Length: 80
Image (tube, rainbow, N blue to C red; front, side, top):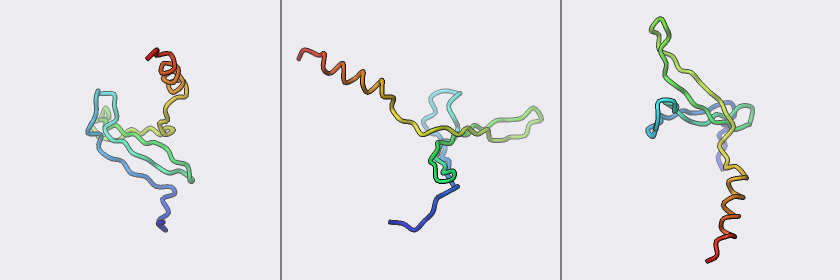
């Protein structure tokens, strides 16, 4: 086990799989006070022409229970 403490730190990586223009330019994770979060960044240009990063922090992605239950129900209802 590592002695490295990653509290209150994170990393962003270029989003090479950007599917549409609303997708973030960079994605990664951040730890805030011991809680893991997802971090996304978009490269934008201000009205004065200055480039900056717009950031969004969100909960880590987890599949919804409804999707899991739906797939289980489908498996049970298939007659073969």
